[in-house]
Picture 1: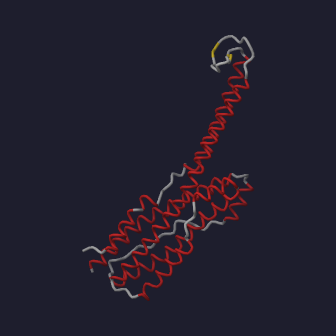
Picture 2: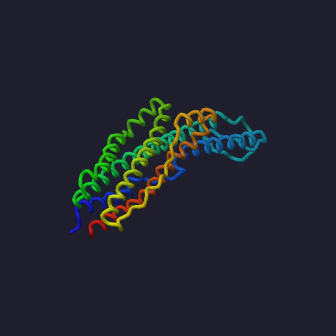
Picture 3: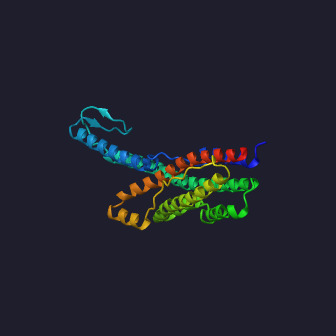
Length: 271
């Protein structure tokens, strides 16, 4: 009969499809792209219409329909300007909603991934106890897991979004903890996988887990802020890229190593 711990470990590994959201790299840039395209389109349209008006090709009737005819009266350009501003406002609102959605998904996937991995390692340690591992051998794994739980506390995504709306500069701190927390989380996991692999290998030589490869580099928040200021915000585009890409790469590595974990534990179970 299969151990309840093994069943739960398998379930937690399968939950990665939901918790470890691999975000498209283009998604965080979509709001800025929308606004940029709208501004360019409206500006181009205005220039074209003004050019046609000067050549007496266009008149704008009260119903705001453009028709081709001889110019007979002044075109109320304020209507066109109002419509342009209205479109920009609507696009801006949609862009803001998308930006807040991305921010929410960034924080949520951080919380979901940390919570799932804590449960996963908790069940792995519990299963090793049932296989006769003494507590002193599991102590290092337990210490790392306790460290994870203390340092990787869930962040309230809705609260941080509200704080961002009220005080936009706080986004810099959000960028900071998203970079830092995943880096520290991965650093702890590298140690945990190394210890786990040795423990399994001691009892069952075939139960080997390859080393967890580091995917997230250390990023200096102060340096990133300075570069963002110097480049008048252009460097922020790269910063956003790292916040999206680093966890994506971490999740991909996780999926490979978690398969190794269940395979190694099943070999241990069969021994």
